[in-house]
Length: 279
Image (cartoon, rainbow, N blue to C red; front, top):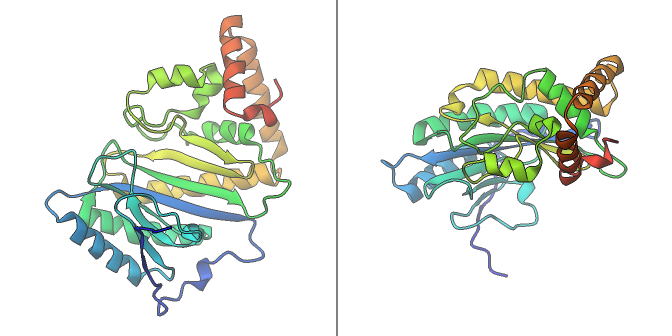
């Protein structure tokens, strides 16, 4: 099948072996950068310039597709420059290859200046992180506890709500069903700012908005907290703290009205949380 994706072979002079996943690693990470190309620039020429700049600090193939999402089998191990379905015509997304935590830091520090040079971020745009266990078989990550933990550390409400794009996932734990949340939303985009993609994989969509690319300190600090919480849940660290969060939330749910509790139970099942949270 014909692919409109252009592949640019990796820069072999760029040595980034320290960011590769090793046998000792438990986790793997990814990141997606949404932004707009400044309208004063020629769009296609600017994409080419960005690709050339990325080549200097990356050691993987670069996939460029301005019409649709790349479908190459190894796309998750490449840099991708592609359209973003939630943005307007001049909106693009750069996604990095599967990498280590240090690798994510490397790409953030190098891609943010490119956004500043060639584009901008607004209330439509966001920064998405992926965290998953390298091991897949038999992993059933406790997403319910992870949500409570991230909420307790103020990670889910740290950024201004982006015009209805990704709502606080704690809404679901307050009784909103997905259908109700869709009524709250005003634009396209996904529902929750924290989502369980697979039994071993979560996606973080809480960060973003106007000039998010200029807040590197805040972003890196929160990213490390999200990663530490993931490890805390996966390795069963600080069990007393985990049990405290669950007990406090169960007390909260116990106090709500029967009708709201019915909606809450419906929301739990719609979200796929019933596997890890027994009502």
